[in-house]
Image (cartoon, rainbow, N blue to C red; front, side, top):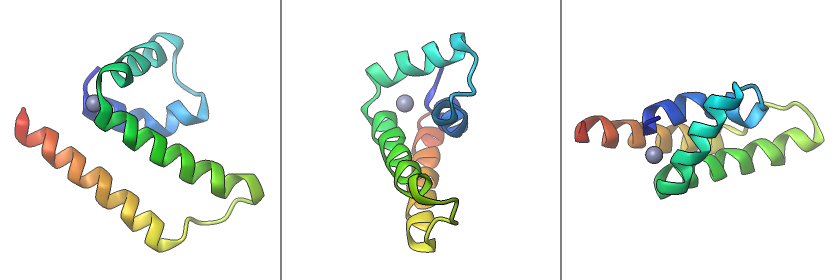
Length: 81
Ligand SMILES: [Zn+2]
């Protein structure tokens, strides 16, 4: 599993919808990759905060910050490859 796959699967991962084998791969990657760990933590935090109360849209500033972080990350990794 690489960083792009992790990012692509983040929402499934946090929703608990990943195949056990995929989930294991993802968690293994997180063990070794601080970058992805930060992103997952960030997304999880955002999801927790906003899903506990009610199903609201993410505030646009948070949404854009998150998207920006993900975009930057994709670009970084893409350039490395
Ligand atoms: Zn990674």
